[in-house]
Length: 255
Ligand SMILES: [Zn+2]
Image (cartoon, rainbow, N blue to C red):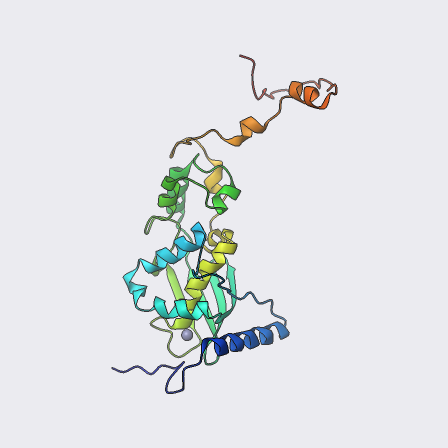
């Protein structure tokens, strides 16, 4: 059956430059209405460049449910058609400029508790800090665990619900596909939004050490702590001995 394309129909193809101008006009209109717009801007040849952005896009592309629909979204997001994209816990709302301005909503379910606990247990002791986590600086083992299909951090199709104000959204229109890629681009800039979107606290991945993946190298904390005796040498000052607080243990007990 031939499908009517609501965006192009029998109208002439709108060149990329014109689409960009149109998107800029739509963004300006939204700003005028008092909305803080956050457009998706793709600068290089790739939609995403960091671990988080790439892992988000790779996750989408591994599901056959999406494979026919996603390519149209790639072109759209690259054209600057996603004029606004906002991520909040469990939901993404966006405006996409097509033949008119469409409103897209993507809902993503929270990571189930047991499933999140398993991720944390498996990664325990292997990630040093939230900064390193968000910068994607961790071992390949952690990377693999976080990206695990179905049991990692990234949602599978059953955990993603979407709708668009265009008439063609039910089977994933290009506006929804563009927004799904737009989320990947946004995670490049603000990876913490993935944790917000999936309703989990990224600090849970750092806190618990012990079980799970063994830490390969020594954490920086111990090396960075200066002993008080060293301080007085470094700064050439006398540091008064303060009475030890009850129960407080010395960081480096004498051997
Ligand atoms: Zn649509």
